[in-house]
Length: 131
Image 1 (cartoon, rainbow, N blue to C red):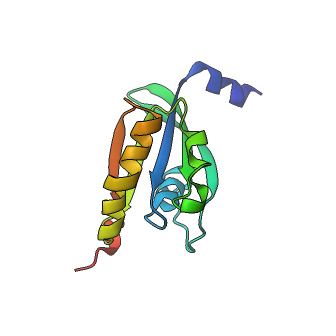
Image 2: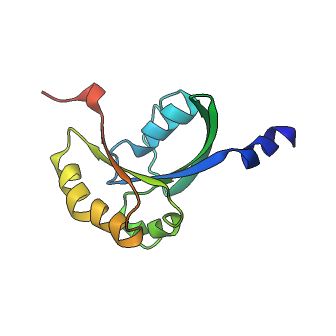
């Protein structure tokens, strides 16, 4: 109980990742959360992680939400959007279509449901960039 009680005394930030399928959202989260890299691609439906971080001596709890980029879950995704503090809208730098979808689908979607919430655009897969 003592370990969990610290969660109630720190600022909590809700961070939601969105983007097309297979752009690296889950890999980014697992790398940050567990300091490992997944070896297999497993499509995500909906997942969340908790991570405590220290910035300039201040403790923060990060509630990290991972959403599916599959259109089959278009009605489920917005259920994770309320009370979001920041969106990470992801694309694959090796896949131009994922950037087009970022502009045409993902940015309009998060703005429609959470107008005014900060958005950070994240280009993933730089480590495997094609020439």
